[in-house]
Length: 260
Image (cartoon, rainbow, N blue to C red; front, side, top):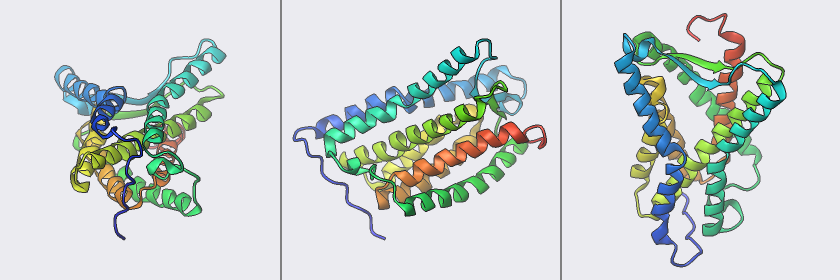
């Protein structure tokens, strides 16, 4: 299948701002997350005896519940906050491409995209689970406490919203927007995909070096496919499903499987 052509931006004179837009979006989202994740890894290596292998790393956490409805609103506000960067991306792409699809296939979800998302979930999820186990056994990752969330009635719904927020944010920002702007700036597909995948790995460094490489491989696979299809929905769906299975699965399995 040949690579799809990115439509030219429709607003004259905007090309020189694409680099600034990309820096701005990453500066309020995953760029700064990559930096803080690196600092977290360094801190664990220095301050914890045995380094990252002996660290407890939480992916999703919430404080012990005191006032349920207020705590629920706090959790929902965090989800809304996480949807800010992808919303910014939508606005910027709307100004560049207009409707429909915003240049990244962000229009109606097609049936084959649903199936593609499920297929990508299996492609990434099963080897990824094996990599999590191997990285922990070899001491490359910390001990993942995937979910640290009080056992309240809204735990699973909030975890599912968190999963969607992660999928939408990462795939719209780090995959679709970043690869679109880098191509418009004249980068080759290969250089853009490697850069995007490296960023994806970087903001997982707080979990350990194994998480960096695992997510980088995921980014290489997602980026290569996206460059050909220019349709972002399968990746949002796959990422949402991966996180949903991870979060909800951890809640019900971590007391029964010793390495989870």
